[in-house]
Length: 250
Ligand SMILES: C[S@@+](CC[C@H](N)C(=O)[O-])C[C@H]1O[C@@H](n2cnc3c(N)ncnc32)[C@H](O)[C@@H]1O
Image 1 (cartoon, rainbow, N blue to C red):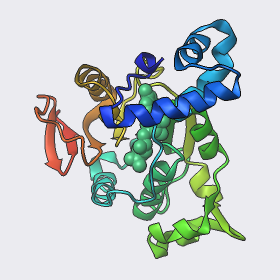
Image 2 (tube, rainbow, N blue to C red; image 1 turned 30 degrees about the horizontal axis):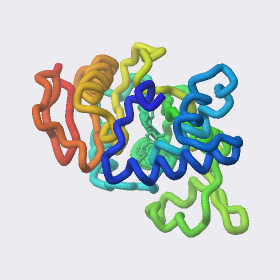
Image 3 (spheres, protein in one colour; image 1 turned 120 degrees about the vertical axis):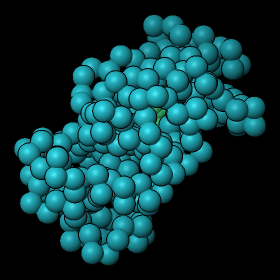
């Protein structure tokens, strides 16, 4: 299954993940890691797959993580050539949605009159539990400080939690999607953020996914990768325009 996800565990992670999987197995009355993995591959184990994905993936994220990308996003959205184009943005590997909401907040800040009919922001992840959090967003109030104060007007507070307000929620479409599978859309997306997700893949898988991301990126579109995912060889279709940020030529 880790093959299906494209994930290659680094050696220092393998023991931790194996221990977590053993604990999952014990809860199901399975005594060895092999028994657990066999159960997972069997028809009876289909219900366990979500838990497996939750265990092997890392969902660490935050609002406005790697803030320079949001400055590039704002500059990108300000372009005259996009003025009458329906905007399509994609947060691929969106975890609990902090990245997608930050993209949406940046869009609302840059284009205050934008409506959900003129813009769609797709937030996808392979982990269903994470996608469910985007569908019913609620975050500890302690995290609100990650978001620039002037954007708090787009958020609703509820005791110790906050969530995106209605205008922001209307922009975002949460979906479950494994980046290893064929994409169920052709794009084009004017902006794709795929950050801190490709780093778990083998070099060949990373290259394949990257190639398919480029295919659905609009000519002139913006692609942002995570801080440790700088491309050693930038594909000819892309031009580096900042730290792990690329523009599609054309
Ligand atoms: C570390 S989080 C990154 C979240 C966010 N992009 C950020 O940079 O803050 C990586 C996310 O990638 C997702 N992921 C891992 N393998 C995936 C795959 N094959 N397809 C789609 N998402 C995947 C994980 O579930 C996790 O939520």
